[in-house]
Amino acid sequence: MARAIRSILDQNFTDLEIIVVDDGSTDETEAMVTNIDAGVRFLKQQRGGPGAARNLGWSAAQGEYIGFLDSDDVWLPWTSRTYLTCIEEFKRPAFIAGTPFWFSSEEELAAVRQSCFSAAFYRDYLASAAKPIWLGASSMLVHRGCMTRFEASRMNGEDLDFALHLGEQRGFVWIEKPFTFGYRRHDLSEVHNLQQTLQGMRHLIFEEKLSRFPGGQHRRRERIELITRAVRPPALEAIRQSQLRSALQLYFKTFYWHIRLRRWKFLLALPLLVLLAPVKQILRRVARRKNLSKSELHQPNC
Image 1 (cartoon, rainbow, N blue to C red):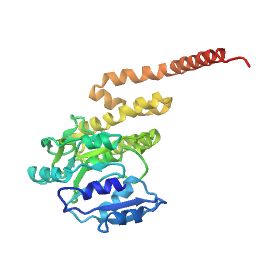
Image 2 (cartoon, rainbow, N blue to C red; image 1 turned 90 degrees about the vertical axis):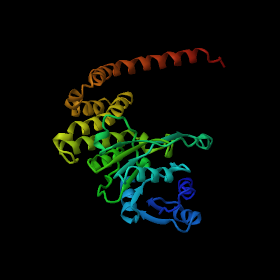
Image 3 (cartoon, rainbow, N blue to C red; image 1 turned 135 degrees about the vertical axis):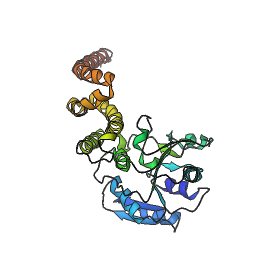
Image 4 (cartoon, rainbow, N blue to C red; image 1 turned 180 degrees about the horizontal axis):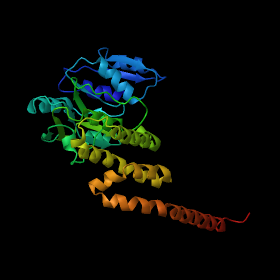
């Protein structure tokens, strides 16, 4: 968290309000935040999850635009200026999404360099559906006039749910260049929790089927394009982790959406992969037994 806070304090545009929300940690987070900078506001909640934490920060914020930064991510030195350029050039859009630089070590992060500004403007977020834009909370900057809130339950995919509820808010900009934040790769991240991801996908499908996202029937195709693009990777990952029932649930819940979008490759491949999964498990067991037998043969006699 300290690294994330310092990355905002080190911005070359300094008219920023920083609010840290502690989601029920048991360490000395408040003391650490105060030691970094006394001007940073500190809020605490009792294990409500990332969505609830962002909502609490949102309700306390005073600025015209609100950005989000997860504790293991960082802003790059030019991030705030890039956002300001975007706001001015595109006449205060409702929603801006930046681009991540994926890193595992500080050496990788130190090597990233600023490139020339390049961005794509859409009349709203739904209008960007044809473009596979990576979206995460740390990539977002949202006008405070938008009344959308994050889903407070513990799930992955709450960032897409948030964006879909923004839906038809006027003006969405995707900053293609430069990178606007560093996204830290590590296996302990909640995005690697398949159960939370599956829960998030079921939530998105449920919201769409109850017509809770804006846009009505005339924007339905754009919404299902965005939702099914998010659904396909975890459905395939569920097969890899032998959670075949979960994979099939996502498949059948979105079956007609995929037909409408003509995603024939997914429609044909997933059932085949489900059928082959038990065969692959048997082959892996046989291979393990063979390897075990070979290792036993090479054991020295005592």
